[in-house]
Image 1 (cartoon, rainbow, N blue to C red):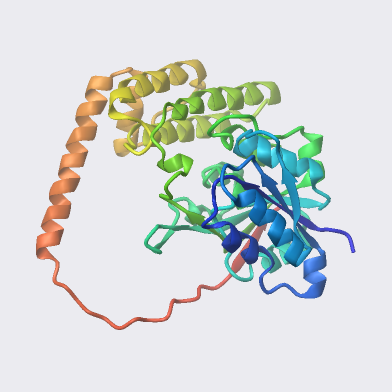
Image 2: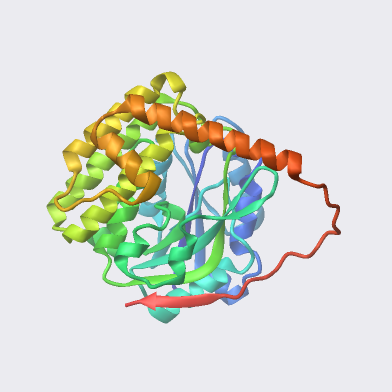
Length: 356
């Protein structure tokens, strides 16, 4: 039987999460469904025992292909290495510290057979270290209407889109090196696709706040986001994207970088001014004709970037933070403790729609 889906799992320093990820991929599949799926784990020269764990898992189960890289290349290039070895018609990049809820692969296989898209978008839940599940702010966009302008606002990650392999080859779409490697990959795959489908179902559990994760690591490597956005705009310049979509992407870019700038877990306070200046420079380089800042507070922040006014931005940020602290303090004093019995978790309905 031909392989319909290749799941590529890049692995680096995730001893405590690796088995959960691998087990979740094939959980509950029938023999027929299992034969349509291959899993390739890419050991990105992991410094811990992950390499040995992968070899042991493959020996015990016989349904895992392991690729060991001789040196650490980073998340994007590790995904590329797995893609080269893939045999499936479609590829799904699953990060090794995350996992798939029960029934996800079956639902994806059924949808791929039904609609044969270039790109299949799926929903996810954010999972906090205390186990709390949270809907992503962009998830409502998957409920429709499924215009390309709206779907560009869905969180731009590799793991929430399943991709036809020959479509990636046709458009030479690969991950670049460095942090924020998703930026110049996930947007072009949507823009280049002729057929985008949406499976409005939670098919992925994304672990947030994990110690060691890029999004929870304070580092100057977050400045690499600027190079990745320059790469994206170079692709846009060579492709002839609709002006309205360029405005949409520009707005999303500035909003994203402002989130990074304001996050103490990523950018050291002493480096925030420099980061803001880089955002302002990117703004000047890539502002498209016809762009207008969004409404409300986000728009005000965009205007401060346009003016390169870090002093006003810092004052505004401090004011909002102080107001938030006072609000939380009032809530904590007014809250009455309530003890309630444990309740079973609710199961939502599955709704699928397609953009053809």
